[in-house]
Length: 98
Length: 321
Image (cartoon, rainbow over all chains, first blue to last red; front, side, top):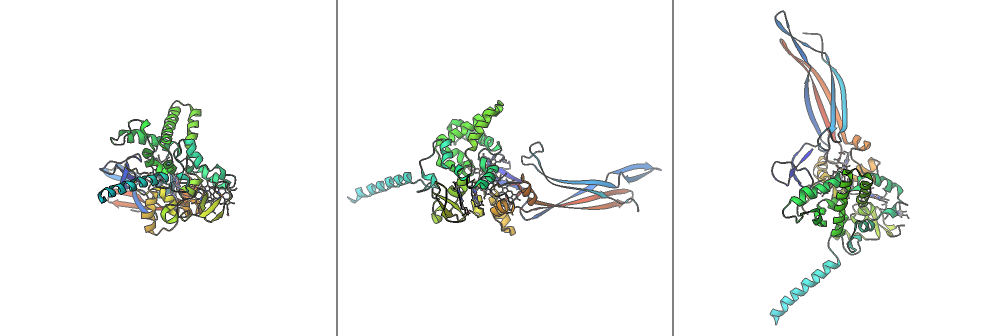
């Protein structure tokens, strides 16, 4: 979202339109451009002692990935949030092999 | 003799200059415009000057669509706009040493124009009494809500929504931005896509409005950044700035009207993401996942990487500031 400056000076964000002037930062989606974000999500790993050695195994070979694009017009989930887009997929990791 | 003559001439000029500005105040209030009549002295008078109820019988569809849009409640909004007008007075004007506003009673038209230039441009054609009436009504509405007297609150809400951005704002008062080159909007004319006779009782002519299908019509209220024309600049909507400086440079070539009125099929019901058609057109989300079994002897770090691509197809940033 565009983060307006307070009275056109300093590092404070302006809230109401009467004190907003200028722009400190803008994380809104720019028109006609593609914005890419990547996230690494790790499978939960169990570490156990077996015969005096540490053995790592995966708790599950599948994971439900959910991506939600929320618009929070007033900055918080308590005030009129809007779910814009949603993506769901179950991803798997191999269970055999070294 | 000469020495006496010159100051006298200068004085004469000054007087005629002033008389001229009373007869035809600058701004949109020139000559044969709706704005040029004596200033409206009450909310009811201002609403009557820009009354577009006569348009309904022949333009039912445009009216019904418009009535659903927030333009029909432009100083009330969802209630939040009216409340922010109040905040702007209490936390703004009343706190500022040089605003000459100590209590809400000191509010004049000039103090509200920082908001009204877009939320209610015709306030410029009203007296300070109207500014006072708007302030009192917002205060009374807020007080009624707090007392949970909803009947009363609704009555005040009705008064506030009687002032709005209606047919006569877009098709008359604000239909011409370049008034020296195109002429001032005439009080008997509606500006649209064609010229000729018009069947309305008061607006008996149609004329081609040069900007009615252009982005600048919307842009005049949809903001560029700080409003430097104000003595204490405000900043609210900036969508037109984003359109000019981000959308067009990326190769965008549609007008506001093309997307908001035509392609959306919403006509005069101009909407944001709250309307399903607009939300669907706005953003594409493309997600790619890639699972990787990372391992190093006894350590394993299996993961999935999630790549999210977001593309904004609107004519400006999302969201607007």
